[in-house]
Length: 594
Image (tube, rainbow, N blue to C red; front, side, top):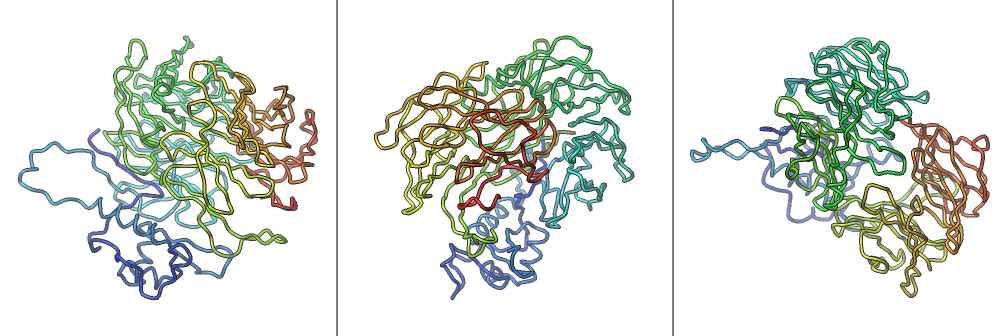
């Protein structure tokens, strides 16, 4: 690929009128007490050495990182010095270097182009066949509005194509570039539509399906059915359909091979086995496992099934590991559909790259900052509304997650790739000191759950191999003694009920929630459904209630609560809290649910 087209919420490009860098020191008289925070347009402008109107334009058109306080009066803004400095540096580095005589005959390397210019939430890119048009989903810089589908010529103005209140995703162009195929989801589930590229009314192609893509010859539409079992193949225009590869489950994405006779999908051969990339002939012949996921896992990496593209004889996809989250190209042998040679890394740097699409030698992808840190804010106990300044809890690169705190809120356990591999961190919230958990067997640790007293820590380890084995380890923190609950607990720790019973999230075709006795290893199901996956359980502080989110395959999640019982709670006893939300947690007194 001779060029790389790059866009996304964190893209930073330079303006030739800027000077070489921000001030070396903060503005005289500015307040340093709020972790380098600048609390007005005037302070931001002084820090950058420009006028107020200029920095407001940069925020509006160039993605200058300025935050708004939604609970305060209109216009209340702030910015952080370290974010402004990073923005400035990334834009400075992308200034085009002047041509020199010696460089005239040098081969052109990959070149980054900014293709969207509004400071907005932007995702799901799609390129036309000649890479002159790009479509994407964006809120257009209007906070609080439903993101819509937009199209623009690269270097031109954007045209909005939709106006609905549904969730739009998985965009792709038809082979003749006259239509855009997309998924629209609401409470009733996902459907596949098309809309004319120059504007018009969307038309339903397939109900109860998602991730639709037209074959290169324009004769077939491939999409993923709602239950994510197999691939649905419909004739051009969406009339009728047949299902192929029905033995494959948890289908995450699909893209066509150039011959229009096969699609490549990310799926599992059965719920208990690990997923991989499969080549599926649309004539009903058996699918072929590429073994690509296993190859990456042996190298300490995992592929991300958010999207993929096929170019020439190679699969282009996202993978994560020690180098970060980047886009790779892997050649696949046409006769065997097996990987050949080493993968080629197409993106690099401190930002994560997602959702690749390829056309006419260009690669477009979503770019986002790779670092993610914890912050705290005071909350009013009566109203649940946040107040006061944000305070940084952690610093450093790499994503983190799976937070777990003790009953007295003195100790926090969390997971991060900060050391270059998965580790569990223990942080003293009173002193600010933290350490990496070194007790237990060697290897990457994840999914920590600390007991209410802080004396026990449970964590999971994902083992290599075709079958998905998930042992759970328990560490006695005072003396560092580890023990295992078994070679395969079929899930990962989420939260302790007390110092003996542990809630786990079980993995299968549809996730469920179970209770495991950490002394005996016995398990009992708490929450399961024949149609929905159940995830993210959280116990109320008094241990009388459990909240969780549940979703049908391909649909948005909803939040529910139920009485906590040491037996299976029927789905009819679940209480709906919000039909379009996820990842709930309780306030400290159990009166509020976030």
